[in-house]
Length: 187
Image (cartoon, rainbow, N blue to C red; front, side):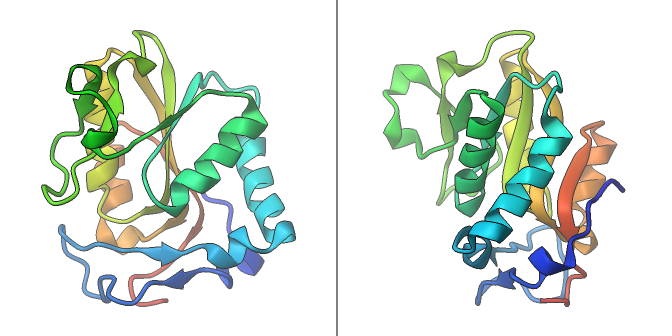
């Protein structure tokens, strides 16, 4: 398990109310509030700096950011690494003939990217705020692979290993990295 534990940053993360409880299931949804990291310049600099150190000089050609607070942090990382950012959005944000819809995501919240954003041989970092069940990462990886691009790694601010997402990704030979990990009942 590759991880850079940082207790000062960890103390700034909160689980959102209504998010799954300590009972981890394949359908559990874990949402965290990273606003304390985003609103503290030193903490934000530390988080992005730790991620930058990991990926600077790597073979990554694109960062694909999943929706939510992870997208904000993914945008900052893409900017710092001077890489293109692919933002996953609602399918309605793109003309029908220009979009690819993510498979296996919540039907109430379908997600898509523009078709022309990846080409064969691109090396993609999938980025989100949280690794929990891995469902959205797995759906995004399917979409990336449909375009003959490669997934270099999945990265997140927080990992909840008890929910099995990291292991599901590793079983698919997708490396996973996070800045911190929490037990299911820790937050």
